[in-house]
Amino acid sequence: MPPGLTDFCTHSYGMKCSFKLGNWWLNVEGFKSKVHEWWSSFEVSGRPDYELATKLSLLKTKLKEWSRENRKIGRQGKSKFSVR
Figure 1 (spheres, rainbow, N blue to C red):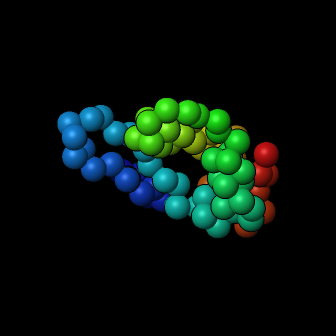
Figure 2: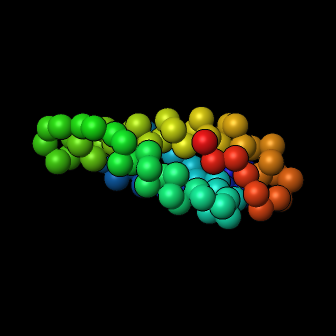
């Protein structure tokens, strides 16, 4: 795994997992509040396990987009990033 990434995959149910957390994300000013904003914006209804799985999938998509937009800055080690 490349440096600066944390793998949160457990393969516990035979499912493929490819989510990796960029360690630099947590140093971005406003990142945690942005994640909270995204999570709160997802409107999903159904069984609790379905709601959780769907929200996690939607959050993963948002995080990938955000990371792609901010990757260059993250590699430069700056503390200020764009949180859109």
